[in-house]
Length: 122
Image 1 (cartoon, rainbow, N blue to C red):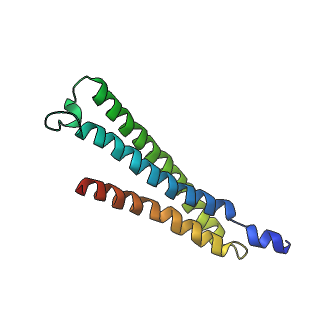
Image 2: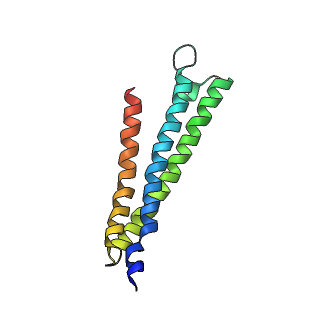
Image 3: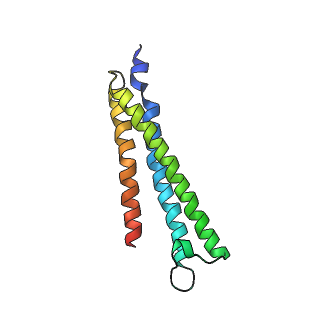
């Protein structure tokens, strides 16, 4: 194995972990945009199972469904990053990248909880 291979072993796992964090951030914004569309409807905010059948409610629900789908994609990316992180952290040529992939994959659910809690507080 040459020097170049040692420097790039596990890079893809770090990229997947970073994408998981990025998709989580985007998913939170999209989900919150849908919530804001529903919250700006006239009258009191109905529960999600009692939304009126109008274009505003359908648009807000669509934004929230897309956000939830993005969370599912982020979860899959995080699981891949964690699995690859374990694999590369056990190899001497990919230890540092494996640890980074583990850290990014593990911070994805924490980031989701923090972002959703902050949105709920508003």
